[in-house]
Image (cartoon, rainbow, N blue to C red; front, side, top):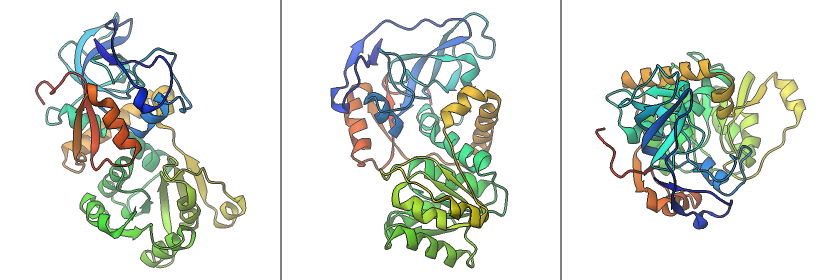
Length: 335
């Protein structure tokens, strides 16, 4: 099979496609014909060797590929050859075939294409755990979603709207307001307006009668975190998702004390490893809400496996205007 094969970590431009042996499913494993795998920011960290969890080399990167079951190992009963599945595999998606634990394979609804299933993967489960588990969201809460036009941000906006929250979306410019309002945001703030440390709180307070947001989801970090923590309501929750702005922020704990607020983080891969039952519930909820028409996958742009450098380069240079998805076997079979 063809695969993006990592023998040494290095820049995106150094990625190579090799012909390697097909993987063989062991006990409890499933072999899939990979139809679609999203390109994610975390993949940039993996291929350059900067991620906190790095597989032994050599390996094919690519998390959560979607595809068709080709074969199963001993003891597998929940899926069979021919099934369409989304996997929660931590690696292997940048290849024509990939292995996954059978327990981490979820049937894709007939109405959902492989490309859309792959594009929703990682973004929607990250957003769900940030909002529902770490943020303990309930109907009527107000949630501020920073970086709301990113994959996780848009997923969080849709999920929060579906669960009955009031959604305030943080966008990098007023030009992006239509995107978040069409995804379900009730209001938006402009993250480019002045010093984020002051302007985020000012804008959120203006929209909440001076109360602040019950939940803040922050995938940005940097100066935006400094402003976000000041926009949290009394007894509110701030959930750290990432540091896309570059700087890993620090926090003066007296502010946490004085406002009785909670600051937590979400590392979604740990949920996949440690709490598979919770992850199964998360995926069931995502597919349920999709089936009810409350979630709409983001627009996608597809790439052949041979164009992996171009795809990750667009992600790295922040030139992507859609969710980027690799098609290791060409156009997907069926949907």
